[in-house]
Amino acid sequence: MKRIVSIVLLAVLLLAPELSEAQCAMCRAVLESGDNNAVAKGINNGIIYLMAVPYILVAGLFYFIYRKMRS
Image (tube, rainbow, N blue to C red; front, side, top):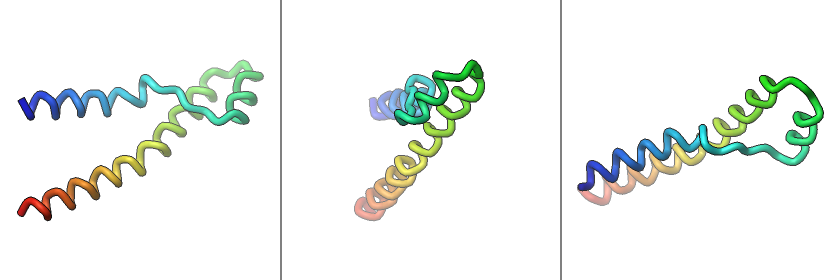
């Protein structure tokens, strides 16, 4: 059961950047005024990557602490 939950959680985390669209108000206003959709998609991907890195680091830290407390 734990393995299934882990696989589902991993799948959700890997697919979350594809499902979310995040932009600050100024970036959105500038990108909506232009006709270049490739630039808008690039900005969205950059924001998602910048947002994901701290969460990955914190998750790794908690995993390390969990392993140390368990042993």
